[in-house]
Image (cartoon, rainbow, N blue to C red; front, side, top):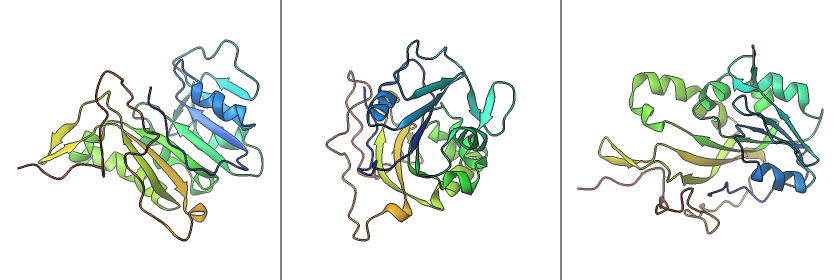
Length: 215
């Protein structure tokens, strides 16, 4: 259930990179149906038995640097992406996103027009070690991208940290800043397209990253 909310700016995207596949490729099938080639990677699964045209799967994990069974985002993109054209990144890699994004080059990141990802273990922001790990990833994206949508994953219940209710898992959509309209308006949160990740639990209704403290 659930699903990412994308900016309405897919026209002209040359390829989508989608690490963290598990056994579900519905997102990639929809993107491939639009004529956008999709590159998938996940070292934990065999991959789809009969992927539809336009989808290529590799049994690899993404990491900070390439090695046995692991590939960096820079090496993956440079080895597979077409030489020109904007790209899209859809990433759900269970906490490895911080190492991947924090070590990616600005040159490779700037090729992505849209980035949609799931941030995990955000409660670690309340520890010095967690902040040191997460900060480089957030700063790397802040150079060229703006957050255009946020949705809390309701599989994980909100935690109470420093007097605030805090979702440990967030789905975040980014748009490269040069694609932003000059006349900006506030994002609608929750968006009408938002759906709960777990239909058995109420969705997390976020008006911002966390609620105001409750007395």
